[in-house]
Each structure stands twice: as structure tokens, then as C-alpha cells.
Image 1 (tube, rainbow, N blue to C red):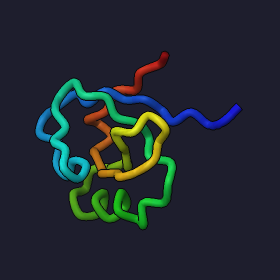
Image 2 (image 1 turned 90 degrees about the vertical axis):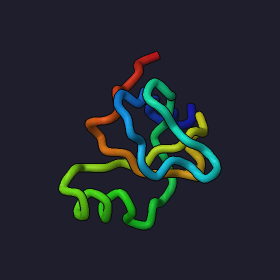
Image 3 (image 1 turned 60 degrees about the horizontal axis):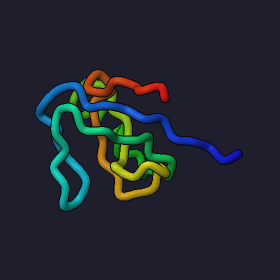
Image 4 (image 1 turned 90 degrees about the horizontal axis):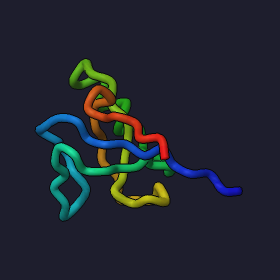
Length: 78
């Protein structure tokens, strides 16, 4: 069995830094990014004082990715 990325719903606006060519909205579904994010979630966490994580719109967890504050995500358990 392969790893299944966590699934989240965006619970608040605005979503800053959406995926390239995309604009994520409140209620959209995103997935845990399973690749290396080059420390960007950490950098955003330090810069804003709010913990961030990297997510993607791809159900398999592949990129492109963007960072979102963790308080703006609600995990969905399928």
C-alpha cells in the first residue's frame, strides 16, 4: 500500500500564495504536499509568526505546492 496524503478543506479567506495559475478559495480541497518544500513553510512560519504547511491541489501529493497557515485547514477523513 502506498502513502496517501492527508486531505484538507480550506476554511478561511484569503489564501495567499495559491498554486501557480490557480486561486484557491474557502471550501476548496487541497492535499498534503509530500515532496521537499525547500524550507518554504518554515520560512513563512518565521516571517508571519503563524505555523504554515505545504499543500497541493494534486490528490497524489505531487507539486506544484504552496504554503497555507495550518489554522486555515480542516482535515477531511475519508
